[in-house]
Length: 155
Image 1: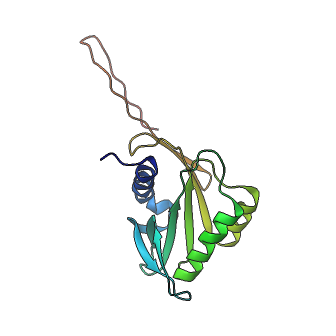
Image 2: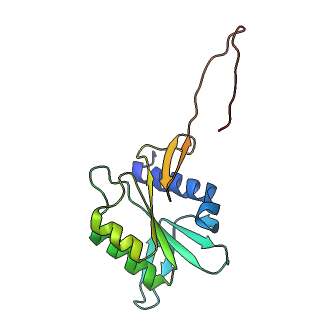
């Protein structure tokens, strides 16, 4: 059975966040799981969990592959409560379009980092934007003929 686009998006986001974990001061980014709400007593399914360098603090990762609108103030408010209730120290919201104006204010106030990841990303081909940085992954297939010279430049 083929995965849905949002499922692939979550997996790629978790993989890339783990790849760039040091940029977020994390030692690891774990897969989708459930965390308990300390105040509410409910369980939350989260798309990924980041473990901070101290080994004890966590951040909650939510992926939203919405391709027609930016993340709203209400959606960020719900994530902010989940972070609070689970006892996390912050969060990461991953989406292709970023945040609306009110959502940006909540993100700043509640230690939520906005990460923009293109909607049709793969682990090899992606554009990842966060914290004034842009990470790009590009792969290509090509045929080499005997008279071809290949030059590789690492930037």
